[in-house]
Image 1 (cartoon, rainbow, N blue to C red):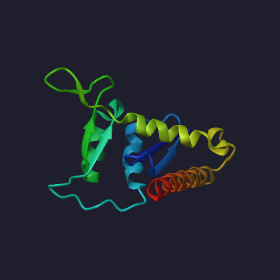
Image 2 (image 1 turned 135 degrees about the vertical axis):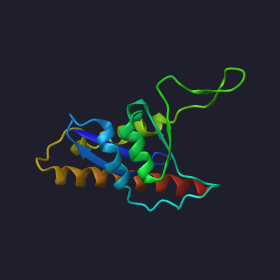
Image 3 (image 1 turned 60 degrees about the vertical axis):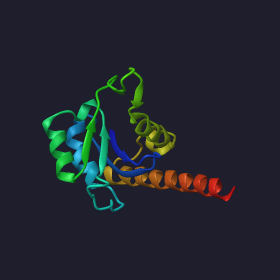
Image 4 (image 1 turned 120 degrees about the vertical axis):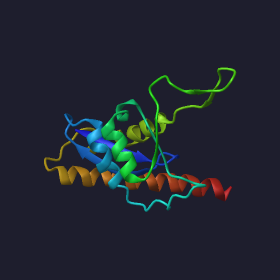
Length: 147
C-alpha cells in the first residue's frame, strides 16, 4: 500500500491518495493534487503557487501534472541544495515536512498495518487520521497564541 500526501508548510495534510505499492509516484501526483480539499488561492504574479517535490517527479509525467495544476514546480534532487556565493545553503530542501507527516500518519494503528480489506474503508481511515493531525496542529497554534 502506498500513501501519497500533499502537505502545507507546517506539515498539515491537504490531500491524500492511496494506491497499490506497485504504482509509481508520478502516476499518483495528479490524483494527489486533485485530492486537495481546501481551495488554493488564485495565483497572481506577486504570489504564484509553488510545489516542492523530490527526485521521483523529475520526468515528463510529473512536469505535466504540475503544469496542469497551475503550480510552479521545484524539483530538487537529493543532495542538491541551493548555495550562495560562499557555498552555504540558502534555501534547504523541505522534504522533511512530508516525511514528518508520514510519520504522524504511521502512528495510527489502523493505518500502520492495513486491516481493512476494502480500499474505500482504508482511505477513510487515512483521511480521519489527517483530520486528527489538523486538530492537533490547530490546538498547538491556539495554545501558542493564547500565551
